[in-house]
Amino acid sequence: MKAVILAAGEGTRLRPFTATEPKVMIPVANRPILQYVVESLVKNGIDEIVMVVGYRRQRIMSYFGDGDDFGADIEYVIQRKQPPSGGTAHALYQAKDKIEDEFLVLPGDNVISKETVSDLLNNMDDYSLLITKSETPSKYGVVTLEKGGEEIRNLIEKPQRSPSHLISTGICSFPPEIFRYIEETMKEDDYDIPSVIQKVLKDKSVRVIRTEETWIDAVYPWDLLHVNSAALGNVNKSINGQIEERVIIKGNVRIGKGTRIRGGSFIEGPAVIGEGCDIGPNACILPSSSIGDNTKVAPFTVIRNSVLMRGVLLEANSTVENSVIGEGVRIGTNFSTYSADSRVDAEDGLHQVKKIGVMIAEDSIVGSGVTVESGVIIGKDCEIKSGRTVRENLESGVKAV
Image (cartoon, rainbow, N blue to C red):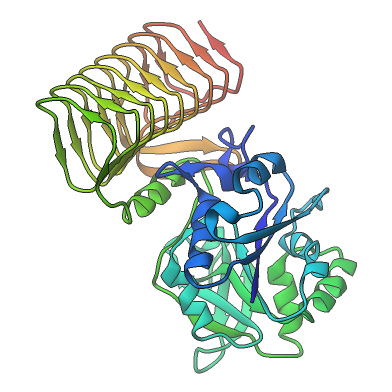
């Protein structure tokens, strides 16, 4: 059986972190989100994979190559131009010539587990959809069921008022005839898989399969914290770096090659520290934190429930909590951001977010003694002068005086 992974989109609601990186390549627990999808398929014996790529596709293709390093045989098809309204069905249609038999479809931008895929494989019919429960169903395709609860009655994409807490994971099984339904739907200028499934329902039944296994989607920048925390749940203890005296390491912590943990530091898992990092002395890294390769964390700095991507410099006496720090960001001494419930101004409006710190996109420079208030999003290539307090979002490229 083949699997088609949809990995062509940008992920506009994740800006500014997707300004130069496709959403599927955003790292959580120091691995691209897409890697979790590939690994979950391979662990279920599905190694023939077709990836539909588009936005920044070279990043994906250079990382995964032919799939050999991941135990898979990966082919690529390109969605060269997306319809104005997006279009998961349009992306899937690009793989038509690669499909001869029943196949799986998966979004490439969710962290999933081996067991999630197994739930579908062990129960599927020709037309099947994996569903789960969500506390925020209006962000997704909402499913209502026929009497008996085993077949779909309706699938509504992002309703303002949700009739159910059951949502589509976007993980499906289809026969090749699905492409006929896609063609019919696209003739009506509709390009999403939920619309295709609605058309299928006029002729056939679509089985629903419930899962309670790992399925987490990052829609907005702050969602990366939840996805990262879930991914860290599978981390095993692995210490490959240099650990100096008086370092305390508790729980499941993975430390990469060439990393130095200096004396007096405290690390509590689950946590991941990449290769070539320099941590401490007397640094404190607390649970649900991921630190990317070649990152430096200076003395007397505290990191809690945060994602620091590759090449970050975090100087002494700083506090980072419930925050996402992009690749190459440089932060001076005595930086602080506090975590609180905040109204966050994102791409599509204001959102009430619980316990959020700051989100800083790649290559921004933050001076010494800077305080950033809870819920602020700072774009890429920004510069914040020393001693400032930042209370509002900064667009990419802004130089704050």
